[in-house]
Image (cartoon, rainbow, N blue to C red; front, side, top):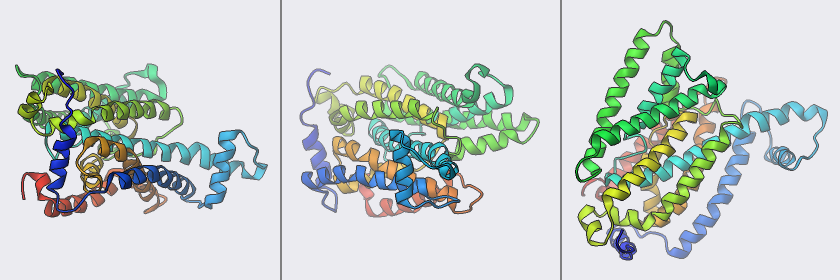
Length: 368
């Protein structure tokens, strides 16, 4: 990078001014960003208290406070406390973490490949994770990781898929958006074929259930042990991506414009590809592939705060986290005691929203 892309905000503003609806003012955006953590906290407490046994919010907050501060509870409250702290809380926090991560990665990927239809899984990462998880489950590999062997296999599969896409898509000019997207789509089909062969050759139906989990997503396996790693990964990745906010503004205008402003798009795209792949792999390893969140959330947020990526990446984590907390709540309560895959809920919500966005905001999809 030869010079700081100081013109990026004005370029983003010009794009935002072409929108039919006026975005929030800077002051309103700051107020929104300040209010979202409160809404997220309320959502988490409510979701932790709702389930097969409904616990009032005040009681839920008391149990959470006791767990965080080492407070005391009575003997007859131990069972309820265990449900709140050991079962529901890590699940709800994992849902919030993955929702935040998917929203942030969706924003970055759409700018990186300049494609409004892109999402965190367009590069074949989810298919690679599914192959890795199913392979570990059936063939007993990575036993050194113990109960986290399947998640480790999913993460390694995601990284391997990312490496294959990178090697196949990289040309003389580096990673170009079109080559990256086409290679990712092709690799996804190839990995799905591999997964189909594994299912066909499996001696029982275990592979089918594993594939359903990793392709539709669930937070049912959430534990306190799996939460810190993915939470730290999402937090660090979000901070790094937000620091690239102005650069993403420039990259969204095209490689030629980026070069004229002193931004080496090919080099930065490579860095972003590695970062988003690591983030996506870490999330898929603990939740499976959950679609439509990284596709729809960025567009909804841009409608409210405008096109500038710094603003979008400020709001996106909390919005995605709140959305995923309530989606997971629906997934585990709609047909209780059975549980729906989270991806079913996100698809049922995301498809209608996506169609409405496409009809109302045609400029986002290649013209009016």
